[in-house]
Length: 399
Ligand code: ADP
Image (tube, rainbow, N blue to C red; front, side, top):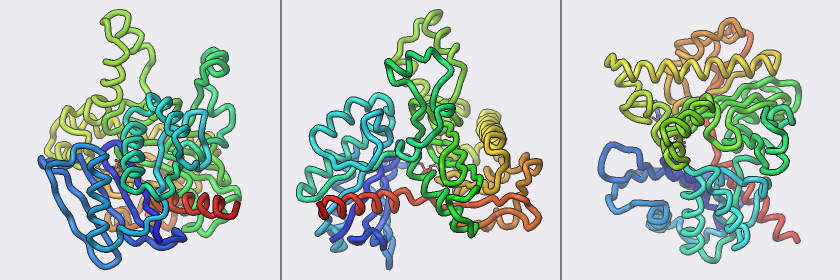
């Protein structure tokens, strides 16, 4: 018996297969739509081997789920999947805790889909495909917003008419919660500290989507993503925070309609919008090193927004004991970590450049003299989702 996790990101579908108790990872991989080639790539890693496959007929998450199940079946890991854990970015006000997916839950998720247009629609397609191909399995939704259910009101209420909160539910939800929760717990372990003591952490989740969270004594104090995953840091194709007056101007003076604004801010902004080259950070790094001015500007903007966010979160926390870098860019770009940390010594955070260049998962990159630690934590959203799925499975069987 095993548990499959499907994590539909904005540009990837990550998957992982765990044993029945969600302890051991049997296989993991990713389907990546972002590669330069015409073909879509699938990576698979098991405990003993790894392989890559390419296909040109995979156009959406429905095809992708089928492909994953075929690949797992080929190595005799496809049978006996008893549960599937799905990462859902936005549960709106309906959901927070891990939830068994039924028709009614699917309908509610459809309703909140518009709030996370890059994530919820592909996740819904993934759920439906998994239900189709694995009809006997239990399907569980694990929400990215759950960790932030604990945010204090001053962090989730916006300075807008209070009735908007009361009548329309406009509030900060916060996202990447599965990752922020995992990374803050793991950071406490790496630092040899209790999670719930007064440990002050800033977690920077820097992938295609980017967010930062201040965690104090195991609880979220503030986070950058808001009512939707569009707020906060600059991202791959998303703008992050901008002056809302820009939208009013474009609507009133330039006849932009909401659909155009949605498209532009979600899909044509961020690293892609500024550089005009790509949303992929590897390409921005390359172009920037080749002295492309727009790529250099995109790098600088990206870096400075992370730096000023770390500064503001540090003030809320009253100092930082640990700064965590995670997700695609945070884990794999020494250059970005170096640029961000360049301005942080005044906060007592000093990066050891030698350690930074040879970094590996879950290590400390700060100099010995640094007052606060700088950690690279490999985010394991899939592991968290498997654990939550297993917990719900146990609970439903004990009833
Ligand atoms: P998501 O899960 O949101 O799709 P990821 O966490 O996988 O995103 O992060 C994707 C980002 O990580 C991309 O911008 C990619 O370019 C960047 N990335 C991955 N590997 C590297 C690397 N070796 N150096 C720099 N950036 C990298």
